[in-house]
Length: 403
Image (cartoon, rainbow, N blue to C red; front, side):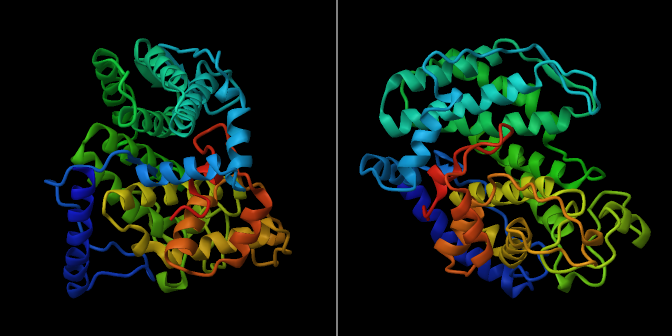
């Protein structure tokens, strides 16, 4: 039935795109929202959170054939602490993550346990060893028995990081493994609905933009796993409003787009919000002059959201492809060592991008056949892209040349 639903979705999407175009929808130059919704009566495609069944099958085939870079990426994942057969979860009832130097409680443990669950889920799908599926379920059940809430000022960001990995892990187990007991599964679903989704679903309009995009990544991931159409559309709306307000294109005008729902709505406030930047160029991000690390988080989250939507028959990539390509190329160029001109962050940039380019590069280059020379060069140098220990994990394995 999954292939039938997918075929129906892909037949309907061009019709919906045509209606949008007739009504004046944008194709991605300005990044304005294309008015196209996913028909609510269509069931979600599973597995379909970031990685599809077809993509998992291709990864397994590559690893079995000992193809590179997939074999090296697989070995990197397998040999990490997250892939250990004796990995033990360390759940907390209340995860406390302050924004300052005060020690947190459960923050690192939660993020790492969620990544470990996803790692074990991927190992199960690639090797067929049920012990990995059992370990993934064990980790998820440990947390769903205990956690109740997230507190302190970084609660929204922490929740988004962890929830993205939890949802990917759960999706990759639920639809490929027959050993997840109904009671454990229902308990895990309740955990996401009660301790995670309410924290991220409405976003954070006045915060730095990586918060909003990471929250949308978590929301759409949980929405697909939970078959929650309303939350899916909520995440799509956040994507359509925040991506143009985070990555600049000259077609936006002399100033960047103001984040919808925020109080950042004057030239002075916008320039301060963009860390003092006064000159804007294609691909610049709201946090470029803060550091490349946070801009890189947002590149990853943008691609994650669009990739999950793609698997559900909604082409968000098409709405932002020029904006995403410009942002990937802009940051990759300077990450590779190009000298920053005086107009860019006063001539000083902090080159600390993470393993965040594979998913976006895969779609733009492999599916759309667009040229991204700087991004491709950087990605090849970084392969295999591993994990940032926050919310990105093993994307050379799952998305390198995996259209």
